Length: 172
Image (cartoon, rainbow, N blue to C red; front, side, top):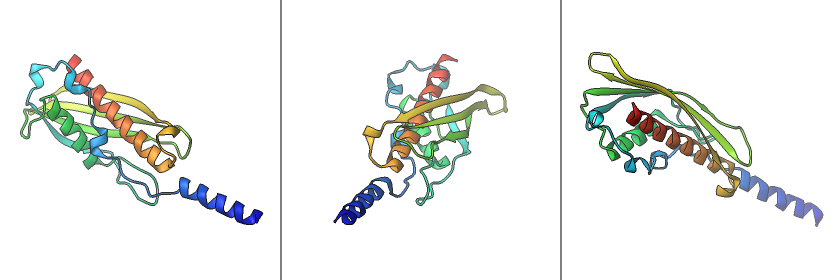
């Protein structure tokens, strides 16, 4: 009987810890507070996201990652929400995800994202260049599953990074 209880307990623990990794969701990476910010006229309908590099695709058998495509979608949607996005903008934004530092395991998972933003004119001159580092912690109370907490931490860190970019751009 004791063996059965231990076996069932072990199975429950494995079920709670295990799971397939899911990529970061672009919708969850979009900041919601940027639409309330004061924007600069110089950037209105002027920014085209030219490139996003440095991201990685998620391997479902491993851990959640942030892909270039998902980061770009979240960034473009955010730029649209503040009126800065343009499909053929006079300013080209190149983004490089320098690092996404993730824990291997833990109860509260903190992910730190380091992103370089380079906004350039068509002649190649840089108008705005900044590297932004943002941590975000997903608490154990957000999900019992570690893979879900890591995904939430990825999304939160990118969300905070995009928001910090818009804030810095408005202040430039």
